[in-house]
View: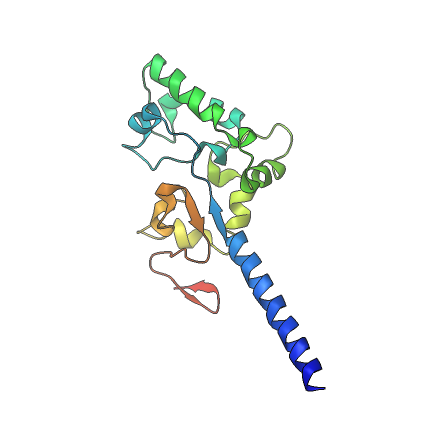
Length: 180
């Protein structure tokens, strides 16, 4: 009888461990680009973090790069040669060309022909941030916009996101939820 109880207890511990390990793996996403681009770094990093190209489909990057004179209300125009080089880099490394699970998931959540203008417009982003209310970001003077990933995700610059370790300034976690 004691051996049976130990066996059941062992199986229960294994199930809890497997579930926790699975949840931790889901919470961690590595979107670091598989190649880098000096042109992308030089053209974009002075204004914002370098977003992983695989976080959007090719059609989105084409749309963004074709409208740099009104890039999220800023003029981010570059020379034609730099634009061509950066666009080619973004297209080569866009979601369709990334075999990692998150890229496939992000693409799978898009409707046919849907062309998000920003990473935060994707259903994948919204699903991953479902516990984050707009006031926690947009009404937060230390964050101000969903485009500033690095404010809440300490390893965003390296393309590593972990929802368990995310910290929203002016909020703390209580029982797994963010509170003010």
